[in-house]
Image (cartoon, rainbow, N blue to C red; front, side, top):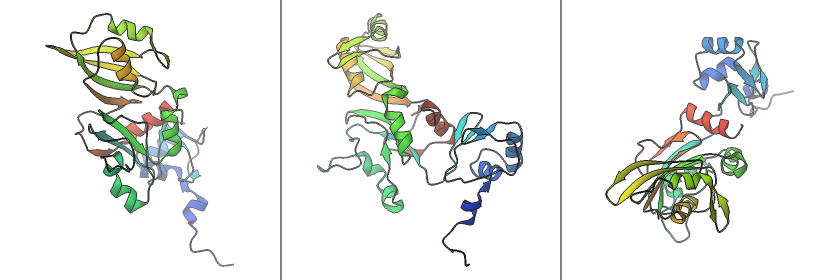
Amino acid sequence: MSSDPRRNPAADEGVRLQKVLAQAGIASRRASEELIAEGRVSVDGEVVREQGRRVNPDTAVIHVDGSRVVVRDDVLHLLLNKPRGVHSTMSDEMGRPCVGDYVKERTETGGTRLFHVGRLDADTEGLLLLTNDGELAHRLMHPSYNVLKTYLAEVPGPVAKDVGKRLKAGIELEDGPIKVDAFRLVDAMPGKALVEVVVHEGRKHVVRRLLEEVGYPVQRLVRTELAGVQLGNQRPGSLRKLNRNEVALLYKAVGL
C-alpha cells in the first residue's frame, strides 16, 4: 500500500517535546530536557517527565511553569497602536480609515483572518490586539473573565481628591452600576490633568461615561494596557508581534 505524499509523517507520529520547546524559543534542547525532568512542562493538562515524549504541535496545549507556550507558527498575536480617527473595523464601507488598513498586507498575502480584541472608538487611541486565535479573542472580550484594561485620560483640572474613592465605590450609569478597579492621578497641569483608570468592563464608551458622570469630561483617551500587555513607547500607527512572555500573559488571563 503506497503512502499518501500529502501526509505529514512528523504530524502523524509527533515531534519530540524538547524539540518543540526549543523551536518555540523556550530553551535549548538540552535545557528543555531539564525542564521536562523537573516536572515544569505539561501537555494537555498533564505534567510530562519522561524524555522523548512526542506531541503534535498543531494540537497540543503546552505549558511551562504554568505559562502557555504557543508552538504553532501560523498563530498571530499583534499589537496595534491605533491612532485617533481610525475605526475599529477590518473594513469600512464609507472608506474611512480602519484597523483593516494596517493589516491588509498580512491578511491578503497569507489568507489569515484576524480578529480585533474589542473595540476602541474612533476618538480613542492606543493598544488594540489582533489575533487569529478566535477562542483567545472571544475570552479576552467576554465579561466573565474580568480582563483588566488600563487607560490614560486627559481631563479638565484640578481633579478633586475624592474622585478616585467615588469611582471605586461605584457609579450608576443609565445601563447599570459600575466601579473602576483602580484610579490614580498621574500628572496635574494648569487647567488639566492626566488620570489613569483601570476597568474590567467592556461597555461602550465606559471610561468616557464614567469620568463625565463625576464631572471630568475626557479630552483625550489612550488605552495603555490589556491583560498585562503594555503599549509602552510604541509609536502611533505601528504594528508589532507580541513576544513570548506577552502571549503567555494573554492566555493566562483567560485560563488557556
